Image (cartoon, rainbow, N blue to C red; front, side, top):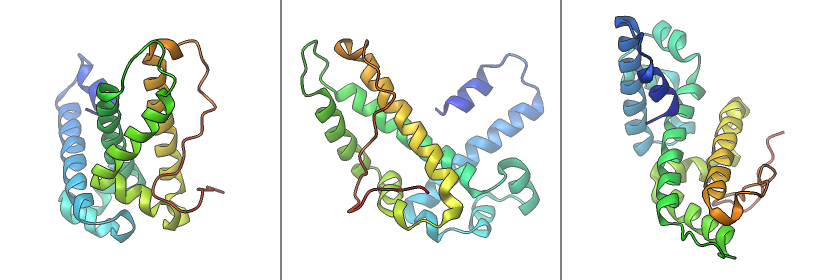
Length: 178
């Protein structure tokens, strides 16, 4: 589950509005995920999301602010699941000299197998500028997940991986957000 939702659910003081909002959020993520399995981000409009989520326009904007937020939630969950699989399959050894290469290979394999992530990374260079906050948020999320995987490996605990730059996936040129 998403860290945000887990945090919300962990609160002991949830009232009926919190529960209703959490249910709306979970349903919105699930329905948006279904939509992203059949269509690419750049093909979607607010009206598509409103229709699928069965929300009024004002409720959608009050709850999410813009499309980037719901896309970020869905893609973040997909990334978390992908990195959970990577963590399970990464060979943990005290003297694994190929850890980063292994991690990068598993990253490419699992992202390729995930339709939503694959379409996102394949189209990242062609997304309009209005998606820049989404791209930055997803880049930061994946950086965090990548570093967390490395820090869990016993021989990499003491190293500082905060400056690691992830290689672009499924692109012929590097990504430049500016």
